[in-house]
Amino acid sequence: MSRSRYPLFHCAAGLLWLALGLILCAQAVLAQAQASKARPGARPERPGAGMANVLEDQGRELLLRKEYQAARAFYEWSARVDPGNAAAYFGRAMAWVGLGRDTLAVDDFERALELGEPPAGVLFNLALVHQRLGDPLAAEQAYTQAVLADSQFIAAYLNRGVLRLRLGKAEEARVDFELLDALRPERPLFIHLHGLTLGLLGRHPEAAADFTRVIALNPGYPRIYASRARARYESGDVAGAVDDLSIAITRAPDDGELYLTRGIALFRQGRGRAALADVSRAAELALDPAHAHLVRGRMLAALRLYPAAVEEFDAAAAAAGTSPGPPFERGIARFDMRDFERAVEDFTHTLGLDPAHADALLNRAAAQYRLQRIDLSCADWALGCERRIEAACRLRQKHCAEIGETRP
Image 1 (cartoon, one colour):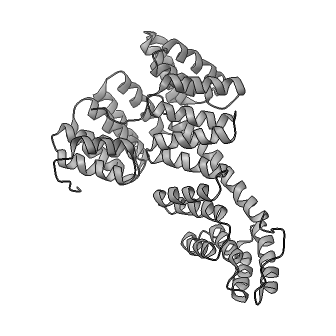
Image 2 (cartoon, helix red, strand yellow):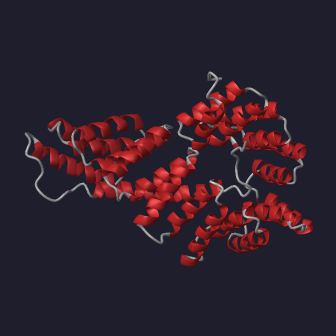
Image 3 (cartoon, rainbow, N blue to C red):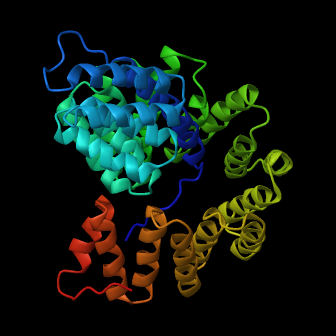
């Protein structure tokens, strides 16, 4: 039975870089949504609508200047003068977002939808708020409603795809990125995301083809050589992976992860001295002691020196505090050394720090399965299936049809 785990080259770093771009994209969309509020044509004729519209316009100007408290007051005044003014509730919701009052923003977004505010932009911003509130499934649903309202809504597809990756729903994310490529052909970001998703699905030669396509469009695209290196490595082209990583290092000479991943590839080539030099350099470049221990632990685990890797992950956990990375990595190492009991403990610890950690949930189920605790495995797969993690649904259907499921 296969199990989910972080890939050797840890594409999470690339996804985090992309997430930063998404945040900037989202902010641009928010500003655009506000700037486009002055729609052409006459506004509805309702009692008090004229004064309400004047107040709404003032609120919009204040919102664009990030004077959120004052903007909230004007939008609130507008809503009082004309309770049917949907735009006033939408504007006040945006002011609440700026003030960090997300729960109140949700109420106003929903009120704006009830009153007939054009739904796509409202739903998109509602999804962003649900993400900030830690409810990714509600966010995914809101993004889906947004694209149903506007089938050309690029930012909604993009954010939903990345969110689905976070939820472990790689196949559904792949569909989002294919739709983006169809809507906006030849955009390196969308092709790169599609390739990363294919890699998560184990379709490494296809992923490498996507990354080669990105390089043809924009040879300077960030981290693209590192992404293609991973796909080549997983496809068995270790020499090609080393070549790509060497190019990536010339572009980002202070990126310790690149040295670590090239070191792993060099070890596989039998070039031990060069590999050790890369790993040492990766540890030197680590941003903090916890990261340095993680670097060494990953290398030792790749060499199957599991007890030594566990010691490094222990040290990383002590230094990193509440980060879910060290206990997850330690769980993977213990799983590989067949210490399933303590692997379960590590994955449970990881889920305590990050309840949405799909890989930890699937690996805990796999460890429980090795311990013949099928009911507990089924409970984890049921939870994963509720989160629409496809692998969890398949495993549940395969192994749990004839037993009762209980939650741990």
